[in-house]
Length: 113
Ligand code: 5GP
Ligand code: ZN
Image 1: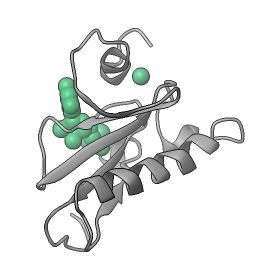
Image 2: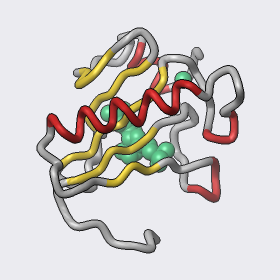
Image 3: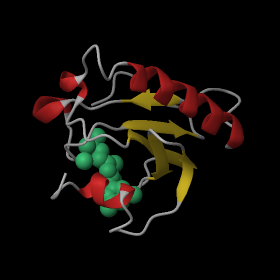
Image 4: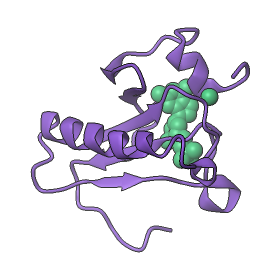
């Protein structure tokens, strides 16, 4: 999608180092990390939010969780980690291309703000 920040990262228009890439998924470091490990995992297809998951694209979400698990292992997050999806305005979503935050390397608090 033309004016989507994450689509620009996927197509190389904005330079970024991928920690993971396959034909459907990419992962890269968050520009503003909230923990020692803070990775964004996204589908290459432009899906705007979790509210746009459907029967056709739902397999990508399972794949993203498998990628999260692999990356968590690579990053040494043996004591656990958090996977977060912010959905639309009230959910705190600021980039309208669905993404999952893989966050770890410190104790997380709950409930989140
Ligand atoms: P959201 O608030 O939508 O759940 O998360 C968007 C995330 O994208 C934020 O954590 C923010 O730091 C990250 N972000 C915003 N712009 C960029 C960018 O240009 N590059 C990278 N790597 N991350 C970004
Ligand atoms: Zn996009």
